[in-house]
Amino acid sequence: MTRLSIRVENLLLVLESYDQIKIYYDSTIDGAFTTELTTESTRIDIVPEASVYEFLDSTGTSSRWYKVSYYNSATEAESAKSSAMQGGTEEEKIGWTFNNYEPPDGEWGDIYTPDDMRYTMLFGIDSVAANTAREEFTDEQFRQLTLEAMAEFETFLTVDIRKRVYKTNPASSLKQSRLWREGVDYTDEEDEYPYDYLEWSNTGFLQLRHSPILSVERAIWKNLVGGTIMDLVENNWLRINKKMGQLNFYPKDGFSYGPYSVYGPIWTRAVGGRYPQGFEIDSSCGFKSAGFIGEDLRSVIAKYATIKALAVVGDGLLAGFSSQSISLDGLSESFSSTQSATSAYFGARIKQYSDEISEWLKRNRYKYSAPPMSFIGV
Image (cartoon, rainbow, N blue to C red; front, top):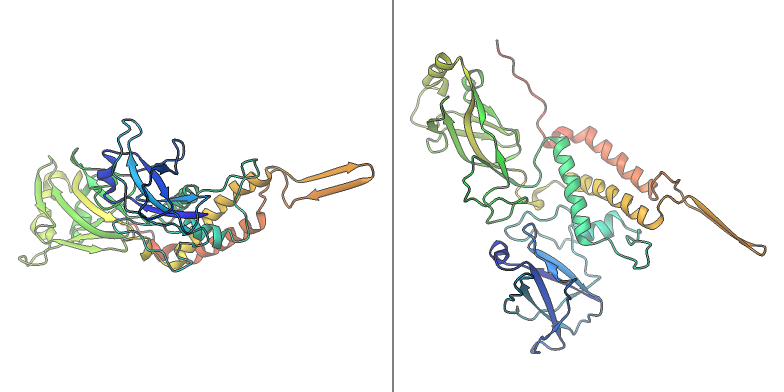
C-alpha cells in the first residue's frame, strides 16, 4: 500500500476550470500512464479550502509510478498530466509529532494533522467502523473535527486562532473564502466601529472585536454623514497593541498635540460626542500560521478534537452496547464492555482528556486572550 500526497498549485486558478483530480499509474517512469487508478466515484474533489490532498493506493508498491491531471466533471475537460512521481509507504507518518510537518506555502496549515490524531492522541485505538466494509476514519473527518474544536476554543477564549482577514464594506470584485490562503482577499466582512469622544480623548483608543492583530491594512475616520475625516494609516497615526487587539490613533510626526485636541472638540460639540459607523477598519487577525501556535494550545485543542473523534469511533465500534451472553448445549460465553447504553465506549480516555482541558483552561484562559475590561464615562 502506498500513499500519494498531491499538491494543487495556483488553487484558485485551477478551480476556475476543474473540480476533480484523476490519478494514473504505470510500472516505469517513462510509461504511457494510460491506466486510471481513480474511478468516477473515487476521483478527488478539489475544494477552495485545501491545496494538499492524500490518496491511498491499496495495491501500490514502491516500484509503481503515478501521474495526476485535473478534470472537469461537468464538461469532461482534462488537463495535461503531471510529471511522474512515486508514493510513500503508509507507515510514513506526517505531523508535528514526527517533526516533519510545516504548513504549505501560502496556507495556514493544520494545527494537528490526521496522523498526529491517529498515532498520538488515539494511540492504541483502531479508528475503523465495525461494519462489513470496515471503513476507516478519513483524513477529512479528522481535519473537520480539528476545525470544529479550534472554532469552539476561539469562542471560549475570545481570540482568533486561524488567520482571518476582515474587510469593511468590501468591493464586490474582491474574493472571499471561508478559510484564508494566499490569493484570497478576505475571509470575513466587518462592521464599522462607533465614534466615542471618551475613548477618542484617551489618545484615540479603539478596541477591536478581534485579537491578536497581525496587521491593520486600512483605518478610516468618518464623519456622521459618511465622509472621510482622515486616513489614519496614510497619515501615520496608527499604533497597535497586537495581543490585546487595541488601536490608538495618535500622530507619530507632524503634530505636537493629541488627536482629541486637534479634532475631538469639533465632533463633541456637533454630535454630542458619539455617533455610529465612525471608523472603517480592515485588519488581519489570528496566528500567522499553525506553526506559530504555542504547543500547550495546540495540545489542548487536539485533545478536544480527540474527544469528539472518540465519541464517533466508539459508537462505530460498539454503539449502545453493555453486555452480551451466549449459551449453547452447556457451553456459554459472555462479554461486558465498560459502557452502558448511554455512556462512551472510550470513557476513561475521554475523562482524562476532559480533566486535562479543564485544568489548562483554569490556568491559561488569559494567556492567549485579553482579560475583561470596561470603561466608565462620567
